[in-house]
Length: 231
Image 1 (cartoon, rainbow, N blue to C red):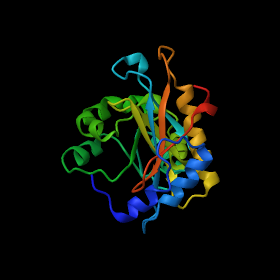
Image 2: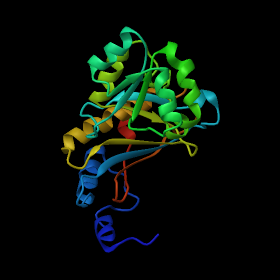
Image 3: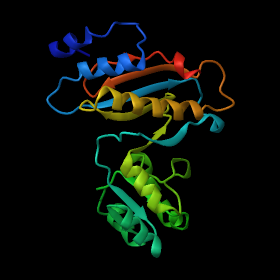
Image 4: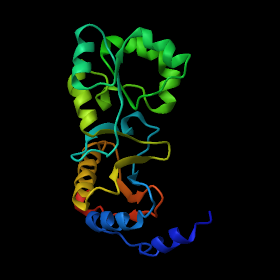
């Protein structure tokens, strides 16, 4: 893939093959984010697990202390008083069975996260074919299937993100924006790494953190030295 001159110029700032400390990596990634828009900063973690085995699936959620810099729209499926609780906590949309045709037939997807109470999963399950491929299906491991909808909504609005292993055994996560301070991005990155390390399956053998890379939306990847994370 041919890259433009601007990309090639900023790529020269990154020493190929070098492993940078998280602080150095954050500083470099911010320097390489030189587009006119506020680029997203992403972490890409290649893990030493085999996601084909159920006991080595990595999936969960973590609250980033400084949020993601993105306004997250939350849809809550609930009934009774739980609808009121969700709305009071700041949910953008609340409802029940009446939302199914709107999503299924009208292609309504003006939301980023779906939360559901356990007693609504029978209803939400009917949307599996449309929510699943978009990564929007509520999941207990991610804390999006819960009776405590108020806290779930508050955490998501405060910067809670979901992480999961893809088919190549890589986790891709947004940790903030280029406009964040170095300290904010480093704190978010450390919170993510702590969660990923805690999620290490007992059955995982060998090196767990095979490679960790930080990058801006349009910038080059910067490899991170993971020694301090202890796995």
